[in-house]
Amino acid sequence: MEDKKRLKMIREVLSNPRNQQEEVQALQDTIYVLGGKWKLPIINSICNGNRRFREIERSIPGITTRMLSRELKEMEANQLIKRTVTPDIPVMITYSPTDYCQSFGDIILEMIKWGKAHRELIKRL
Amino acid sequence: MEDKKRLKMIREVLSNPRNQQEEVQALQDTIYVLGGKWKLPIINSICNGNRRFREIERSIPGITTRMLSRELKEMEANQLIKRTVTPDIPVMITYSPTDYCQSFGDIILEMIKWGKAHRELIKRL
DNA sequence: CGGGATCCCCATTGATACTG
DNA sequence: CAGTATCAATGGGGATCCCG
Image (cartoon, rainbow over all chains, first blue to last red; front, top):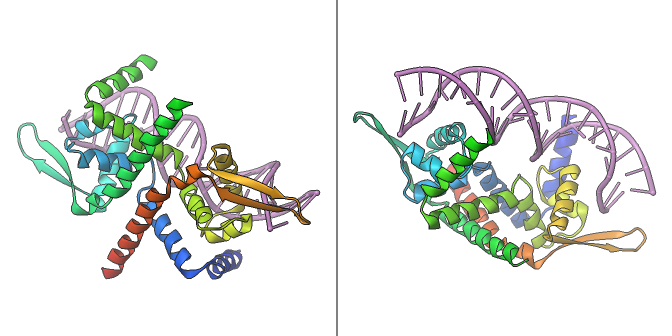
């Protein structure tokens, strides 16, 4: 059972040039970290200046409070964002991007660029 | 039921600056097209020169024939790749990238870059 | 080699309602 | 405003076997 799977893995690694292998894994790592429909839009929203919970929620079409809540918690644990509580009446809670979060900037920009170009293409059909 | 949802959508759109709205949607479009764990690694593999089915399969750690088969079919339908049958004995089948497929190049490069940087970061902890 | 067919699980997401 | 709780569904993905 397990041996078969391991053998397959080993064969995969051996049959693949070293440098290509490294790149595929890096790519898969990134896909894993950014997994799901929401992380990138959330990062984008916060980096765009949205700070409050409802503000972020409204800025992302289709997201539910539940998903936003879960993702924010996870992203805070992963040091992607910072949660700040300001004890006013009523309390104010703000989310802000960390430096690490900013490192996704180029990926997001490229994806927005692609999405826009894609829309243009569709429109022309 | 439906009205509530539509009202929410409308409120979302109205509360969001025009340009921001456009970018979020472009971003979500891209995420949708690239959805799942495999499309980007497959594109990357084919753009890297892998052509045969087993070759592509071996170049992507963890993928199964079923997933690869499904994704290839879908991507062919979406004009992302071209499938060619060479009637030798036995028949040879090759997949190649279309121009459209190449348009993901920058996204993939950015993601590989991020993945590599992330690995370095983890190693240093 | 290049897949197709089946069975099945569970993680992700959604909908809705409720709270301090 | 800023979430939490609960229930339900769907489909992405894995495992396995099979075929020409």
